[in-house]
Length: 516
Image 1 (tube, rainbow, N blue to C red):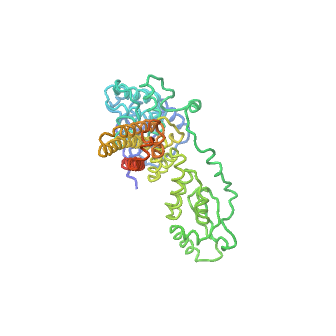
Image 2: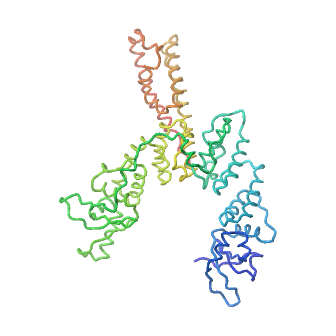
Image 3: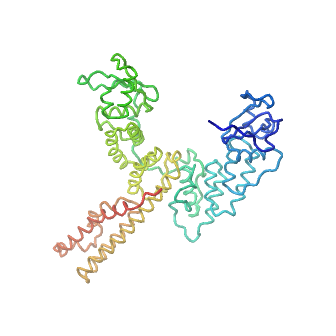
């Protein structure tokens, strides 16, 4: 039960007011519609419509009450700028943001301009310009976002033009990225790197046009991956595999009202949740054999179709589309369908080998942490320069998830470099212990590892083939000489060293912490 509302402080408690704004924390602001109509086109339009009036005691004005989402502190600050009274001073970006957000929401041109100016006035003295960029992103204010990024640029050392792989100054909790999308993050990172390289940014910070998207270098991916999944759900047949089974005895409905006739036994075997619900339905109908039970679900037609197909036909009917796989997996978790979960996981892994980038953002958006981490690991081997690639799903997933991926990717690249450094040290130690004078063999393998590290900047998965590749690496390979071919011990040492190198690199990557 909500607590009774209390009246706001003056001047928002006057008896001459003709309308009441009730905040989320149950404070009533008694205001004058004529003033709000002048300050806000939103309220001007709303007041032209009939307003509900609540019954009140005879000594209390019978005003219309409008519930608003803002709290009393935010609404008080905003309304004081609309009324001819002294406006409070806001000394932080955190205090200004909710008021500016409300001004934008209610289409208040003058308060929007004033609070934007006050926000930007705080920028020169801040040590956290990224916060202003994030506020601009959340509120859709391009100029605020750009001014924040420009301030961040000025804070970066000019003597270090290194390409940024992640935005600097992000805390471990990523509180600065709340309400910011991965697309906003990518555009900010691109903006900074292009400016540091002396190039003009090719897009605004908050939006893309179709022409800009066409100019991006989109990676090749699986074609028409969804076309085979556009099933005519209104024509889905009964899932009766044939005369070997009795006729369907229960109807499953989807979130859109589609009905599929299936078998109680199959549902009960695969899902304890379905089993309990079926037993409850039987109890409600007193187990009347003439009654066709109806089991309502909140699953989409496509998701329910595939879940039932797996129950009847096994995992071979699973799609390869990550979006559908994530929907099936979430449904299986809700209904505790262990066999379906076990079927989806290997198919998801196979899908990640084809397009881990899309899979990552699909899993991130669906809240599937295990699938997200799996996809991130495949991204490490799939993409060398993560910050160069943009996908449309980034505008519907969080910047926090993107930052996590960028941080993990950069840490994995560092781990690989460190492992290659250790590999050179191990080989040099092996050669020296065997024959201190045999320096040329050590030099050649060390040179190969240096070239491997350079190649990994473009082909991050090339280390998997280093055993085969090393013998074709160079025409000056001393191990290709006839004398060396007779040196079986030396060849075994090289073979074992290169056979273990990919495994050690894999182990180094596996040691990288999946943060946040």
